[in-house]
Amino acid sequence: MPSSIFNSQTPTLIAGPCSAETEAQVLETARALALIPEVKVFRAGIWKPRTRPGAFEGMGEVALKWLQKVKAETGLLTAVEAGNPEHVEELLKHGIDIIWIGARTTVNPFAVQEIADAVKGNNVHVWVKNPINPDLKLWMGAIERIEKAGIENVVAIHRGFQVYENSVYRYPPKWDIPISLMSERPDLKIVCDPSHITGKRDMLLSVSQKAMDLGFDGLMIETHPNPDQAWSDAAQQITPQTLQQLLAQLQIRDRNIEGVGFTNELESLRNMVDSLDEELLEIIAKRMDLIAKIGSYKKQHNITVFQPERWLEIKKSRANFGENLKLNPEFVLNILTEIHNESIRFQTEIIYPEINQNNEH
Ligand code: PEP
Ligand code: MN
Image (cartoon, rainbow, N blue to C red):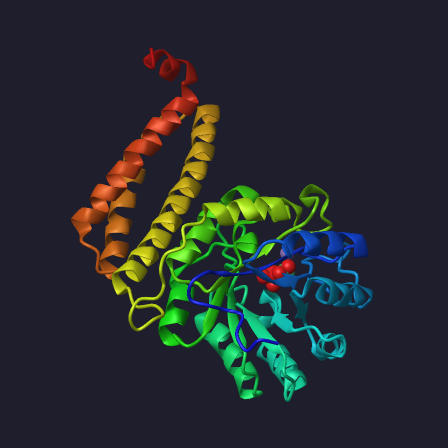
């Protein structure tokens, strides 16, 4: 096992299916991935944490033999998720090189400590996905538990965070959190998992590019010979050939600047702003959905679009709310006026679709 599979010139790729399904699928994927020089690690889930029972929960131990074949035949390192000490024991027994802790396990310090105790004294790499909830301290705490167990190769995996709001992402990246981790732990390698962040193929490139621009050390991308037929996470998987195309399109910038690591503070702040702007727009879109519902209600009950008392109440309460956040009341009023105007225009369109169509001519 090389002491580090990372270098500062090119990102390290971890690829492979969400789940090991059959021996043929595992080997076919691995053989194709082994032809891509950046791919150093073959990943496959064999115990799958599914939100509800009844979904495919992984093939279990039988699949570990398939992974041993992958390693023997292709030389790729192997990585599998462990959710408990029994999993760890099986993985160690089968010579799996990298054990990763999944997002649903990182949230629980008891579970992480049990895994830390189980890996103690073994020369295995342990990679820690961020907790599913956006909590930097919990992520760092899990990493520290593994380090305290004497594991030398600990890597952070950023896979996005669950938020209550709907989002274009399956798990919004909230880049400010991995950026904070990089600032606090510049010594730590960090890999981005755009597959779980996006949940869909067509956004993989943009999120991967962002990760590269932020100086991530690698990417974990789910790959399957027949993505649409995958038994788990079908919408986000890509073929090894598509992965190769994606890599060809990635702009890799020189990360070898003096001081190495995350030195460009302005860039990191801008990235946090980008991330917040996306959230801002998602919230406005969500507000518009409600505005549409209210528009339909007004139409049904024959109520006028503009309700002056309601508008006065909004202005007053939001100005107070904004002031508590130290926002300039005039600025708050300007934003709200713009949003309110757009809401009125939108509802008018809902109530009188024919008028607005005419206006376009
Ligand atoms: C996975 O990598 O397939 C997985 C289950 O990941 P996460 O823990 O990030 O949901
Ligand atoms: Mn998956």
